[in-house]
Image (cartoon, rainbow, N blue to C red; front, side):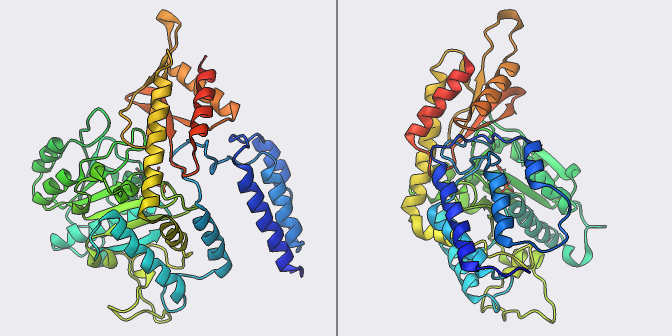
Length: 468
Ligand SMILES: Cc1ncc(COP(=O)(O)O)c(C=O)c1O
């Protein structure tokens, strides 16, 4: 190890981070460095001997910041479903690194464990979910869905007289996983992780905007009564933003003794709005997942799982060992009882800071502002000849298609892909593509608290210019 002046080094890195963040407002969003340029700048032979840490990190940052970064925290980034980083959450996340608390157990990390405990309680209250629900701060929506389905697997097999934690799945009653046709890919992936297999999946039809049809859920569940069943619906379709009618689906699922999970990676925070009619009946489900790194605008990586049936959640996740210092039942909260991770970063700390700095009003303001920006995108773009908005903009997602004017040989898919590529190249904003009902589309997701009216105006102008 080479001795350095740590304080000066860290200050210089903090200044760098601050400058990067400040520059996002005006900088182009799209990276300009080529992969080969990045490899050349960052590669080289395997290091054999110690080097000056300050020189190492500044050299790495020089290489990265020379056009290598996507402006994901820019107010003009509309790709995937990616939020920015609220000032309080951003700062708290830095402290999580400085404190470096392994928050798997309460006893060695009491302060960060209490922060997570409080953040979890606030979150249940804000989202209107049963206050006795268990929760865990995990790495993202994928692990939140996986954890919820592990709890569900325990629960529905337990009801069928099978202890999956002890006996595994070999010889168990087969679980049926019922999902909407618009299910997010992380649910079948969770089914693979949990040994349910994708062949256990049965599909329920959806409406034109991608929301699950309760009548078809009823039909599917009636086909095989008595089979242990987990139903997954969603609050926020990754393409259209559609929200499944959770209350109705919960009533149907429960009439068939099924577990209802809500994948709310995108849309669950809309439940914090005082007029949360979009999510009526949300509290009737058995488990919920969401992301803090999407609409709550907490830095990566941070997802959340919530479970009504805490005994099943705990049974699916808990672990004990002689060397661990575990809390007595009913006393403190050990994250290891609820998380798939063992050692873990205190990723609930930035959530606490986000919730405390926003309050209900602040979350509502972000949700409503992003939805209004999305509606404005749809309005402005669809008033341009040759541009069509394909979805009902019920949340923060917009699907746009560009029509090729070349008569009989028109190729609207090619035209749409070409416009997306031209917008990405231009760099005013960044957004990606998808396919909706077998048609190529541009996806616009407004998830960043920092997006302004002017950001939308400039981005619409860039999109229209690219389409001409
Ligand atoms: C509906 C839905 N569920 C789950 C996920 C996965 O979330 P993560 O990327 O945080 O794992 C996403 C990601 O976009 C999503 O849109």
